[in-house]
Length: 284
Ligand SMILES: NC(=O)c1ccc[n+]([C@@H]2O[C@H](COP(=O)([O-])OP(=O)(O)OC[C@H]3O[C@@H](n4cnc5c(N)ncnc54)[C@H](OP(=O)(O)O)[C@@H]3O)[C@@H](O)[C@H]2O)c1
Image 1 (cartoon, helix red, strand yellow):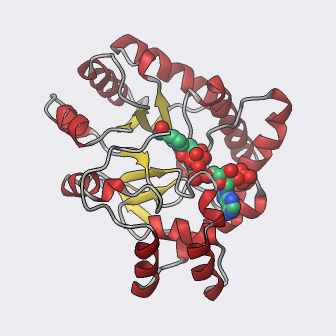
Image 2: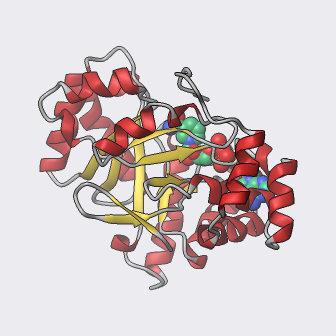
Image 3: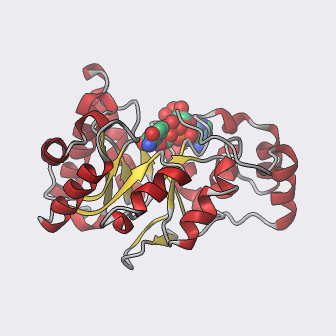
């Protein structure tokens, strides 16, 4: 598995597993735990979740699968990078500390590897950062970052004491939503701040895209794999496709070994035009 290096020097997998829409219905719980367990079995080592997903249910699903894998002796906690997020309405200083404790409990772990502010809300950013720093000092999180922050938000963040400790920004990034290439990606690159690309298959839509399918056919790959390889052509972009289907989980993991050539990238650019001016940050 290719890795992305964080500013701290730590290497994290370039491809992880998304968990949005897991943990929403109790009747689906066993199947979802089995899917995450299967993902761990075949080699996924980064999982993205959030307190918001399934109102804590997704973190419980991840926790159950992780516990099972550890108890079976298939891996140790340190093998897996866990990303989770606090919702803005909880992101006051005390609220963030309490939300993190609840997430740790649901995940069944002592620490979260990368803890993010899910999007910018009305709580003062300085209070959230102070809480993140306290959590880091107490060993409850290893790194912190943000999500859905555009350049202006990141500049305000960086102006704060400890704002420079922000490790990653998780944003919508796929061939069909590539506005960040104009300004956000270069801004982050200058500061060695990788992106975590969410919706890298555009919520499944790119799996049916004709341009990606044509490139894929020549390589015995699927359109979804090419869409993921396209995101991962950036050495500082981590892709977190969500998949519950075992075939999809396997396919997506293998996408990390595809390197697109110049002609293939040009064909993709012809279909999904690179941004020539500032575009509003896409969000789901
Ligand atoms: N920070 C934020 O605000 C934010 C917002 C949105 C998402 N996220 C995170 O990013 C993750 C990924 O985003 P997403 O789930 O919205 O979209 P996505 O990963 O682009 O697409 C997921 C959809 O694609 C399908 N799929 C996956 N692999 C496939 C394959 N190889 N072939 C065909 N279809 C495939 C999945 O189906 P199956 O499930 O049937 O396999 C699912 O319907 C989320 O799960 C979440 O962890 C974060």
